[in-house]
Image (tube, rainbow, N blue to C red; front, side, top):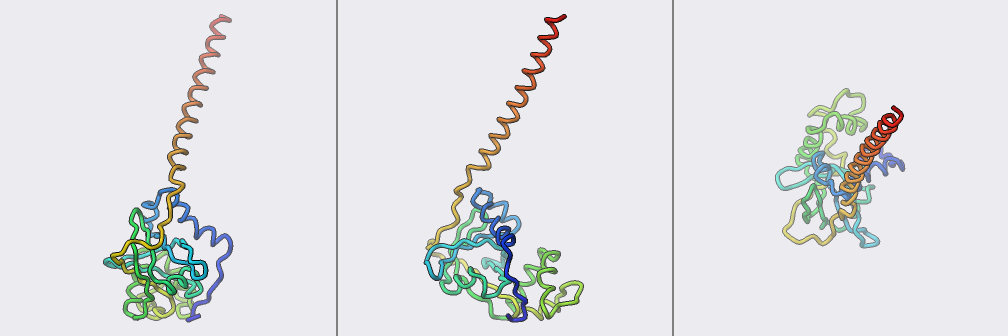
Length: 209
């Protein structure tokens, strides 16, 4: 597959990949945006229903770039290529974007640089297993030029139309404050119980004396 040894993700890998969706549902999208993770809503090719996928992105001007390590095998890629008007959610922002495959080598190289430059310790391990780079200690600028056609990169260009697909709902937003209140209540009860026990012991000792 274009020089990529595609490996189907395991059940655990799929679970981990969906964890950012849970974080967004908890209302913590800004935290995920700090590590450059967005939620992409595509329309299912067969069902027509919204499909949510979390992935890393890099920005260049107004455009966003996302990378598929599975090439066209990724379901979200197939959906986006079939119906390219998508909804993008990053942090608290929700926009409509046009998804297009990057085909120009220069633009692909720029996108790979963006991904590698902000997290080289991660993307050295992502890029290195490719056939063109095996045996190299690190991914260099020259090495990046050798793999520009090996990854599928999508460009997400904002368009001035209302979202036709929904953003991921923050339906679990109540959980963090509820957990916080429960923690505070538990602490107060623990302190109250400690004070009550201490007072009771002192009272009994005073009576005995």
